[in-house]
Image (cartoon, rainbow, N blue to C red; front, side, top):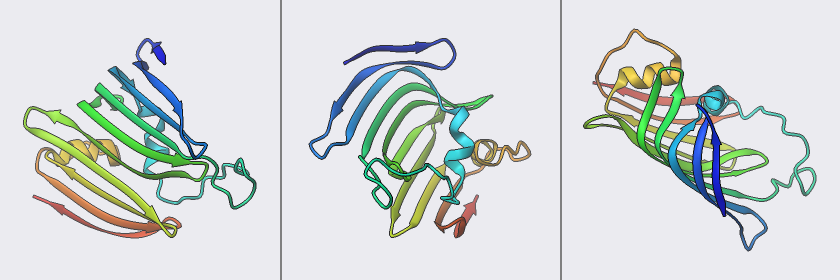
Length: 168
């Protein structure tokens, strides 16, 4: 059990870390606050070009799978942007993010939902935001859009991809 992970302004979570039967790990964490802002740019990088070195089992082996579940009352995404009542479920290995979902509340009656998947080297990303301006600030660091709704469905391979973006 993890009694408490705390660093002022960065993290305040409790939970557990357990070994999976296949050799991977499962982390289940919950608490009032988690700051994900330091990782946002790397998470949003669709190039898949991060060199993480040789995996645990050697070249070609993605190593153990890490299941990460975080339920945070507040998730900081950028310096001035956060979501509330956040639920994060991610599957990662040495090659990076494999699949997952992130849901939360931007504001009263305004939600955010992200789904991520990968298969055969293709990453799929779906995003729904009840506040397109919020999504633009988080994803693009752009502050010139206010309100509206945003839907994004994309497929990416080796940094190239196509996406359907709908704003209303």
